[in-house]
Length: 400
Image (tube, rainbow, N blue to C red; front, top):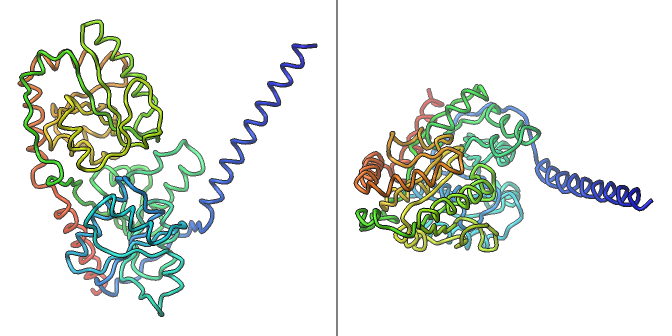
């Protein structure tokens, strides 16, 4: 009788848990469906090149993707365009500005709520010459504006989800008629291979800001005698950054190194300070100055670029910090061979690689010099100028 009661209690508990998960998922999808439009549009000719509006979900502090939008918008403003950032979720303009300033101190452009902007067109606001979607969920909003529509593709977003509704919905946005511009070549390759777009897709160089991450004097020869190895690890909660696998791997790596008399000091960064990560210290979300200090103090950096590469590997290389990446990810797509320690998703791999690497400090230095040479000429000015030229090319094509 008691066993039957326990079984029934477990069944009811599991049922309640499943119902709760369903309700949470349902509420999240209802938020996605609010304003959702899956239609394909035909782009009208561009009427001018004076104003551009970027549509974003919300402005969030310490967010790499939104920092990239601000950098791109700032460069376009420097080129003479009037730049707007339109936020479609509820957020005050004051909060938008505060978050933007935390991401990029000297950003240029102005903010407005999307709905207020649309309702004010013809009164307080003018229709922009170009509107730019910046993530798959913003595409529906960009299509509400009857103007030339572009799509700044920073990552292949279907890979953010398990196969299902959001995977399919995000993939469909690549075929909805917007003029796409890919940050780097990898997104473009994935879209052409998996989404078969019918509208134009251009690409711009993957940049980094060299002035914020100058090279640090580093004694590579001292690596051979290290009894403590400090690794700066970029972590995010979403799956493409391996947030659960990396702590597991590095915990096993620490055990392996300890058997050789070497301590592993793991310092995570990139997520909120409240984010709990086993086997290391979470430094939270760091400013540019904090990141530069961390890169200078660490012996190796580690990033899991499993979809489109992030800015972090570029920043680490720029400061002279040796890098650990994953061969299953996209790092080899962006950098030449033998510029980083390329691990497999194998908990025994990294300890052996580190032990071998510190025996040959000269090769560590050579790898990073090769990476830095490959990065020469990359900048947000160059990338912004490329985007500017794409806009003007589209404008001139519309006049023909």
